[in-house]
Length: 295
Ligand SMILES: [Zn+2]
Image 1 (cartoon, protein in one colour):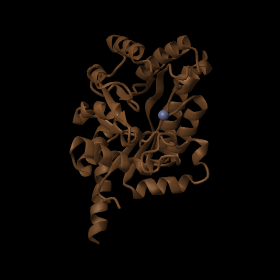
Image 2 (image 1 turned 30 degrees about the vertical axis):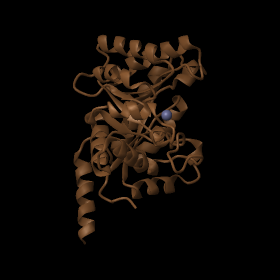
Image 3 (image 1 turned 135 degrees about the vertical axis):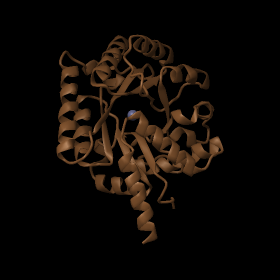
């Protein structure tokens, strides 16, 4: 169904979750068949960060993020930052031994969630700042989760920016599953963030994310599934997975009046820049695809 030369990148999925244990190899092969060449697994807590790293070490198309989600902020302890740092170093070393590039590419997902308030707001705020410092120490971009906490998230990010916690020569990170208003987008762009869009842009009643999508510059847009959540149309109600990224990309293309090819190429290039992944192998893969087509 999809042109084999279209290359997609799912910048946010939780395929290290229990939900994917039964058919993990099939999930990866369906993603590959759909043209998804890279998936970044976002982590929710320490154990989840370890699970993501374990998978990423052995699967060249997978990358891991490490971090503690605002829901789990209450699990943060005195040794958490040191253990996450060790995990990053060990996983990257193991990845090199396994013959691949470094596999931990971000710190996340981190931020504030005042919709569910699963952790006390004070703890969320404290753990968010601590992880912005951790990401700086590890020289990693951040994956930001912000839900019903735009004002405070923005002020924490502005403070981090003023304190020099974001790399100047690279994107600061990504605002994951952007659900804020179009008016807030410029402030996030000014801090160096890319903006991630997911299944909700395909929903029939979507309005806010579509308005926001329209104001994101071409070089700041990335696509994510957030699998197993937020399944795009027409699979709503079923488990989400990375092979559905083209559905989100095609919808984004329609909204922006572009071709799916352009959106695939653009969002993949943005994701590679965001996570500082070298382009050389991507080009080799592209050539291999071209060659296999002509044989
Ligand atoms: Zn997520």
